[in-house]
Image (cartoon, rainbow, N blue to C red; front, side):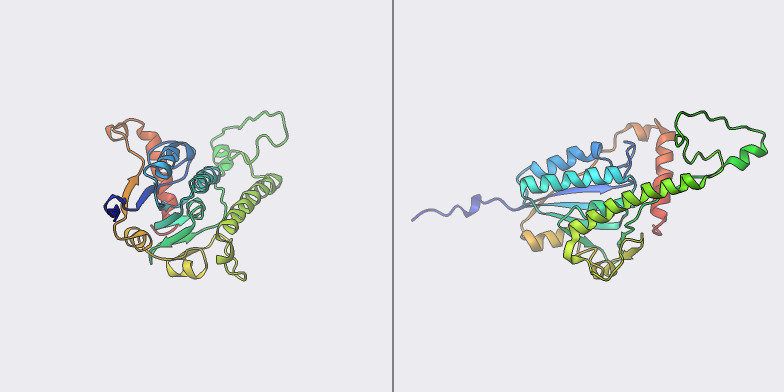
Length: 266
């Protein structure tokens, strides 16, 4: 009779990646970008042969390119390692945040989570009248008709607005294609989900943008066993920001982050 080796079996491992903050090409503070989170994602998919990887998401969005790069990295590793990915939305996964969520195989939300905003936005300002009142003349010299497109210190031109609209439409199309590719048949055929609208909790589930109401530990234990072990991978905050260095840059990013979260009442 062979001795039982049950005691040698390892408990299932769930590696958890925290992705929280504005998605930005600038690597400051809590900002998320492919360069800053790549080491976390790579470790989460390789360390300890995980049964699953869980994304804990809280992001109002930001850079579409960085969202795409991070999402593509998650998908590439998930397919290479054959590891299922679950996204758990906390306060919000909107715009680029939802791009990241839809990189997962399953999306779980809280009853109060804000989800969606599948759209693209560009915001600027117009100060040409202000500088004119103060006797300031704007001088711009270019080689190329469109080189100074949408200069905030000059009157807005209809051609520039049309060109910007074309750019935004192309990015929007890429976003829509990503969501359709990832969510597939889960999306209702007769619903227009790509207007930039957001949904909360169960409404997001009804729209096919999420798979159910669930929280990280109980859901993962339900799926992978009560003895599942969790290891968290999150960005480390260095001491320098807390000691007063780079205050101006970090303050600017903090204000941008505050404004983006405020769009969703958070």
